[in-house]
Length: 53
Image (cartoon, rainbow, N blue to C red):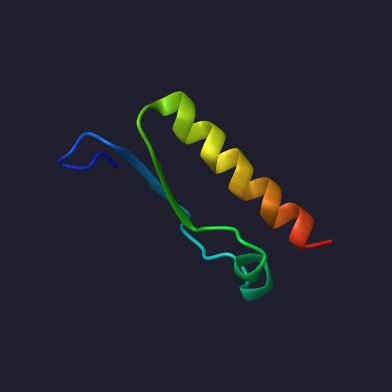
């Protein structure tokens, strides 16, 4: 999604499990451009993977 201010937003269709959110992963993220948005998503998915171990 793109906001009225021009920022890009992404949100997961399914929320993270509670333990993953408690570990710091966010379901919805934003960034200034597509490259940054992909990086932010990758960080969140990495947090989720680590928390699930």
